[in-house]
Every structure is written in C-alpha cells, then in structure tokens.
Image (cartoon, rainbow, N blue to C red):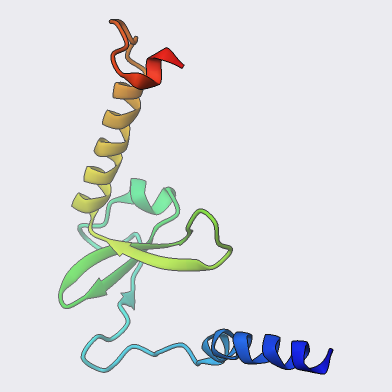
Length: 114
C-alpha cells in the first residue's frame, strides 16, 4: 500500500511542481500597456461599451479584456487593435452566415450510408 502511494506521488510530482511554478512577469522589454480612458482621441466608444479596456503600448492603441477559454476556468487578458477586433467580428459573422445556409444536395461518402 505504501509503495502504491509513493508511486502516485512520484508520478504526480512533476505536475504538482508545474502548478507551483510562479507566473512569469512581463520583462522591461515588454511593459504592460498603460491604461487609458474612452475620452482619449481615437478611442472607439462602442468597443469601450462592449467591455474593452483601452490601453496604449508602443504608441499604439489597444483594447483589452479578460477572456476564458473553453475547458478552463483560467482567464487571460487579450489585447487587440480595433481593426483586429472588427476583423474577428466579421469572420465570426461570416461563419455564422455560412452555417445558416440551407443544405441542399446529395450526401456523398461512407458517412452517408451508415
């Protein structure tokens, strides 16, 4: 019984060590973006209303928000330009439109004859 418990601890050791490793901080070469307000010139007020926080980095304007990936409870902060956000929204809408098209035609392949 003791050997089994010891084996489990040895097997889980690297996993537990990885969980205890401190999170890396941003280096001075990549400082955190400075926070800004919606009153700044060039800020898209619609993105601020949508929950984005305005930040400046390297003279560029970014919109940041915390997002959780599917399958995890850990949130990450994602910062994008307004153009990247609008492109992402356009691609999402395009995918939705494609998926809502009526499916006509005949199914071809082994999957259809099951």
